[in-house]
Image (cartoon, rainbow, N blue to C red; front, side, top):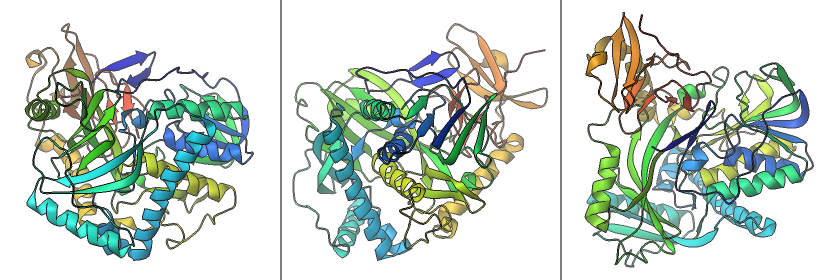
Length: 509
């Protein structure tokens, strides 16, 4: 992973380039607004965009830089064909809910396109076909079931065509009416619109406390607002809400490379997504090919390097070693495959949340932003039941998919038990340059790592979020939490939330 540090701020370097990145000041005084939005990724910016257009005074509070988190790692593909989701939604939530999600996704694509064109946002927005495919027999059966689900929802799917992949596939589906773009350039366009129309944006402003009625304390300053939107990727307020029990985080690893002779036209005008557990995704970014895959739950210790899996795949099928950049992206996964958008909890009337985008954040961020802003603007009841708002955070998603729920709870329990059952036995002196491990030091769990120059770093091996045990990520050289997805660099700085405090540094006595 390539990173940039600005003071205490962590930024991930990805394939995306900003034309001109405008900087915003840190919050340095008390402020008043109608709606305070916590989080400056695509979901927070879309929420602010809708509210500013409606004449609301809005402020965005971003811990790092606008778009620097999960948005920066997105493949930025707008599609309603999100894996094999519709047969699942029909089975678990019913035809009406599945139809609403399909319609909402298609409408989100149209509305984002309209916004980009109307506001003249320069974000490399282009139309593409989207191809779902599988190389396995079981995947072929899954795709055929998905075709039936689309027909049940009144939508036809193209099946007979050459997908144009460099290897044989068992089945593929083609979908029209999809788009791709540069997500950071879109963030810049939205940010400019928001500030030019009276909105305020504050960067390097980490929010740690929950809103208290109309007050939000940030250090020595106070933000006064009628309503608050938590758009921080993983919600940072643990109680009420219980989002730490409703979701987990999943990682995808990415390598962008320049294609060799013979692949100059591959993926031009078409984006690809494999439904296989070990499959890959491809799209063009300019002349480069972005390959995404090798996914894993945050904190799981893979036996093989995820980047090595990508390297071998690219070398085998594209005959290329001309790498541009590599990085890891992650997203929140819900138990029932629907995102959350609405009132944060029954116990608070003026705090709203958007989260759980299930790796389809570009469409789902728009959908969720529209839901919460419609509630704030009085267009949708904040207590709307599931048949009116299928994204309500108050739905009982845990019982919709009991297997996923039990697995998630078991993973959390195993993380706590790991301190007793499975602690690495490595000593400080056995950790080589670029390596790391969780070790026991004076009876405590410690994250030990060594820089390339030989410097030894020691941090607490306990996640400051809810006390889960961290794991060493050898691909990223980070310490990751398998429970809720918080991640820390080797010096304890926060890379991903929900943690709001760094992992403590430890000194050898």
